[in-house]
Amino acid sequence: PACPLPAPGAAAEPGGAARLPVEAKPPVVLLHGFIDNRSVFVLLRRSLAQHGRQRVESLNYSPLTCDIRTAAELLGRHIEEICERTGSKRVDVVGHSLGGLIARYYVQRLGGDLRVRTLVTLGTPHAGTRVAPLANAHPIVRQMRPGSELIEELSRPAPGCRTYFVSFWSDLDHLMDPLESACVDHPDLKAENVRVSGIGHLALPVHPAVASGIRQALDTVRPGDPSANRAGGLTVA
Image (tube, rainbow, N blue to C red):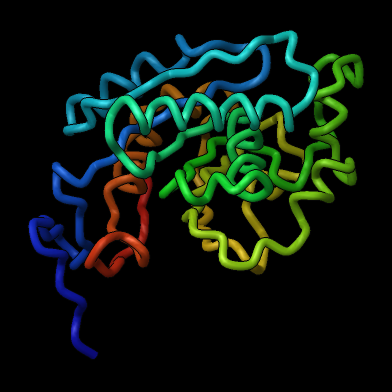
């Protein structure tokens, strides 16, 4: 079969993958993990900026936040403000650990798929994890356990979800039990799971190979992008 052509204005990459033209790149929103803050994304912000992503926002959420649903609502307000300020209709989101779960809830349960083009998650317990810090002392930690009401809610049907998911999971992530809980496994979601080797949970947002994979994930043209078709898959060296 014939290879799909890049979109007008998009650059062709070796292997036939199409890349988003510079002017089409939406803002990127970075969302940190539990007991962390936006400083974890300093290197990733720099990497994205060096490769043409000039509109990058790192959001802090309060460590006092006790509910993923509430945090997702606040994320939605932030994204609406970013879209209004930048004139962009959609954004890309990168979420580390809990940040990815907050963003997924916004996308899947609060209509955020209208605003989020691509959601990249790094070591996010999509299916819940049995290894949780501070045991069950914090309400959000309980929401990240397998079988929690929130994890069950995310397993419900999500027909027509517009967001494309890219989940990076590591074979050395000691906070994911089982390791594959960091993969997106949902029949209604367009998702790609990318395995990385030898990178710990806290290193995922700062590792150069992961940063390269994130850039590739955000720049790949996918179905639903204006006048473009997606080609090629992700590789992380």
